[in-house]
Amino acid sequence: QVQLVESGGGLVQPGGSLRLSCAASRTIFTFNAMAWYRQAPGKQREWVATITLVGRTNYTDSAKGRFTISRDNAKNTLYLQMMSLKPEDTAVYYCNTAGALTRKTSWGQGTQVTVSS
View 1 (cartoon, rainbow, N blue to C red):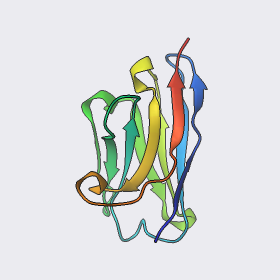
View 2: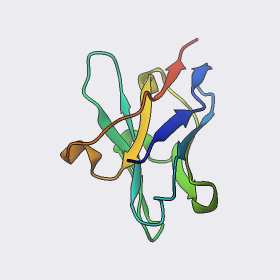
View 3: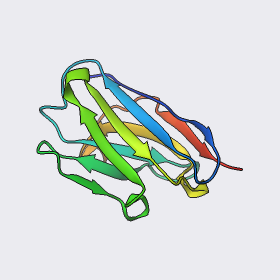
View 4: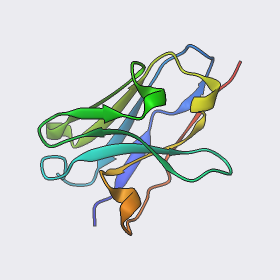
């Protein structure tokens, strides 16, 4: 079982930036498309961004133009660069394989992102 540990969250003002990291316990990024998810209080976990095995990226509408998903396979690390953050981006952010919402899977503790003035 692969462990995924998210980090990089914090408190930022609207318009600020953060880069989230997801460290894997072993090499998986060369074998799986990866994704970022988030969950706000009282809401279900939702998909945010995906990077495929061939490097193609896709984003939820609210993230397009502001977020960038990337990975460093050598470091077993997935990233989410977030720019122009908005209060509605406030949530716990998780990384997992693409399609994780459609199957039983384990989740890490995530990293809290709070956007507030």
